[in-house]
Length: 137
Length: 338
Image (cartoon, rainbow over the protein chains, first blue to last red):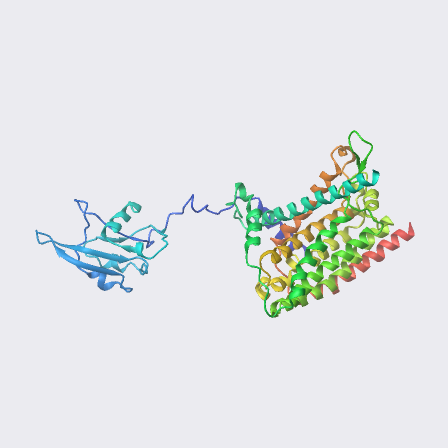
């Protein structure tokens, strides 16, 4: 009866003198998994504009209906999103928008850190989505 | 004039002992969290100041500024008095513990004794006051007007009665050996190297004392009164703010007291382990021995799971109690035959 107790004490003493395996979070970060679905970003085309052609597939497929798009055409007859609004506070990060996108414009990013004190800033427009690109090289 | 000096000396010693005790209690919480953290292969608190050294201050400030709730269905007077009983008795224990030998104040012929009181019945005083501390827990749980609190205090009462017997009997062997209840006398008889310490003459009693002591102060393998998983904190469930902090401080002060009594009775008190090391002050040896024991208390907390209530009762009455009786019989037989 005594020997298992001493064994346990030995094990904890051994652990006590081993190095902690904790990652000190804000200073050091673990890379997210390769399949991680974080905050979305827009892929840029050659002119630095969004690749999005405003087809509206992501808006249709979105289960939480957090995407709203207003379509417009430029002088060459090319469609582009006049307003592209993604409510990140309602998004469930399912990744359907990325799957549905036919032109490879919207992607799920790797960024998972976003804190605000009110809800308004969570409404992402085209500029914010393009900005998110910098977290996803 | 002599009387005035004596008064000043007593007041100074009390202040120093109280201050050191409270500082140790505060940092013991940090030491415990750090140690448990490292046992669980993580760091423990390290955000407040370098190595988390300001964490006890932060905890203290938090405890002061939290809302002080008194539940409507509680027995209000007892509810307020209970934490006070707990902390006062815990601090009172340190009045008789000899921290070190006496020394002459440099430049004068004034002899300073490094203990607050050197009474003839020191050991008896310790056991009387230590048992009083349990009233704080029992009354605190009972007066909360909460079922979990009541359960916790019932368990505390049952556990105290069971383990007080074995705790008291385990040190009777030491009293027989040293023929005295005066703590300084017990320490003096253990002088001259670690092979004279009582732990070699009373090894079973030492182990039994440590186990019963842990049960007496409700520390982890025996922390029935505040079993987190079953009683949602037990006796202190309704306490908040400074009242809770007082219970918390009392628990840690009790832990230091149990360690200090064990050092005094079994590990030679302030005596150095080898007589050649006598040039180091006795207080240092006392503190080193005390912290070795406290290290063990925290270490075993990180190792052993909590016993079930019936297991604790069985262990107390069917294992520890007979063992202490046998130890006592053998000791008295050997002493009387010598």
